[in-house]
Image 1: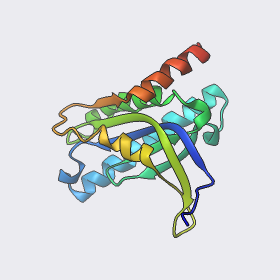
Image 2 (image 1 turned 90 degrees about the horizontal axis):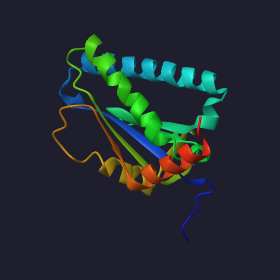
Image 3 (image 1 turned 45 degrees about the vertical axis):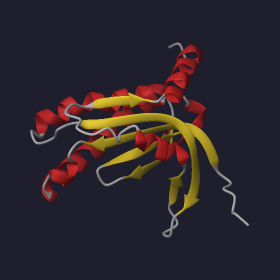
Image 4 (image 1 turned 90 degrees about the vertical axis):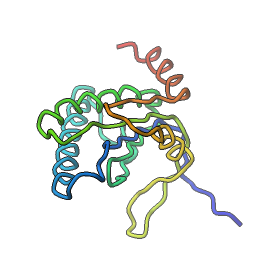
Length: 167
């Protein structure tokens, strides 16, 4: 009998992937990941402060991919993923000024299903078709500039989100 996940959500997923990350040296990889992590943390912190929200109200979780990360949004904010993806993309210009070997980021935004589970260390983690479908939007090769790809489902939810939260 197949196990059923208790925590299944349809929500926005934002995947950030660093272009040509594997071609960088280990030190360059670390510098970029460290800078992106700190920059995005500050950006999210400012967003939370200005909207008087907690992190858990915005984000269910983050999943490192080694050369980027998935950001899984709280389902109550379905539609906000495209805005967050564009906000992440905005920082790529700042990163390239600081690190000339940084080539940019690819960002995919998709609304899909995720399943929460506990990994072998007991940490919260996620799997699901939503993550897989989101990754497929970045399968196009040879990106030479930072790009944001938004799926049709994420776009439809963005329109709904904008109509609900006009400010």
